Length: 612
Image (cartoon, rainbow, N blue to C red; front, side, top):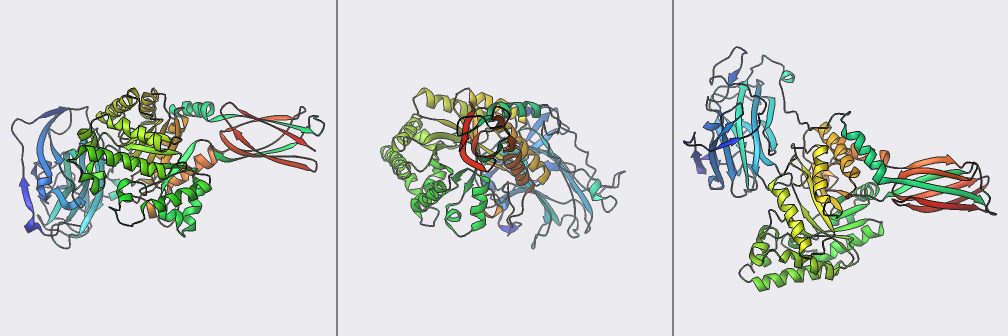
């Protein structure tokens, strides 16, 4: 949707600034060189931008929410970039945007190609990326669009390229070239923008497009063998079966069927309480068939319980859903007791900002009431969420309040495993970041000050900035030094390229499953019909399988699932190596059959069958 009324919108024009700041980065892939607007170059292309490129864009919309500047770069194929700092969120992506009018005419079905580089400087996104959307549209009602392409940029310069066809004809200056900025506060840089019209002289398929890859994506990448060896070491053990007759004599050639029924490792998802309790049988069928762990997505958040989001269900619906999940044998997680920023707390709590004693008491009461009500029903609790970006309560009440929240949670529910949780730890590429450094310091602070924190939660919301398997291992090793279990609490991947999304899902799960400190991976929803970004990892809205969903099933229900048929040897025994979890073992010899349930633990498990 375009801006509704251009006449009512403020305009902030900027250009190259004297005394620009400089930032030095490694070289990025070279961008093509633009020609003069309206001028045809030797390749028959016409530039749709003037020679100043990104520096001739203007800001429109609620411009008080956006600070623009130009920044000089070194080591890049472009000298200056636009730095866009979003200072406040908008109601929609087009609430504020930077744009420029097209510099040359375009005919319907002309082949257009845009190229630019972008990177994130600061971000609140769970993936650590900064967001924009490239749009080419008619600059007036009905705002007809030729392209609307979502962009997710990580901390390193990334090349974006999009070929597309013009949806209609535009005179010079009639169409708008736009980067939308109506998002959560973030800082993003964009440079090397080239936008060209190839007319109808080329096949659109021949033009380069954004190619999302990550190190280690290759089928023969060395990390794969190492991961498989770790999986065999940490996720499998030996099942020893002995079959005897009634007198204790070994029975040779007894037929033994060993069938896994449940993983010991937590393979989970977020779910919606109303769906769990509702009449959607397909939702509940897939939920129980694909997962052994569930977290309620929003039903136990304080704002939801306080009624700020409507619904009026309170904690009753959440409790009933958790009871149903427990009856199905699910491990259940609670999310979240304290999300310590005003924007993620009830309005009634924000009203206590000037009354610290009452505020502190309100938080303690919420923990006691909520964890106390769910006592014995939840196996895990996220006690505190996203402290890097959510710290209003700590700023007002002091850092040691975090310790008290864990202590009050332990008192309210002594048996629940207590977690800290944060985003942009696994996502956003490798290396050290301020977010990762802060998380390590926060965990150390909690443990040093006696917080009864049992485990470390890491969200895993990914966009186009994909962290390599080798870097994932390094990050996990860093936090595993605390000697606490690690769980991925919120996995999803926002990519248009289904093939890459499937490959990364496969490689992410393989890497995490191979690390000995990790004991669970939880998706943040599995079906597009009930997913916060409408891009769930498993199913589309019509319940057809995403490619990433097939990748998940191929791993969790095939490659990492044990089902064996074998016969005992002369000594009446056999040994099978299987994945840790619960098994049904059936033994048959002659006309005698016996079945036992067996739990395979890391040290291995034994079972003796006496056929009478």
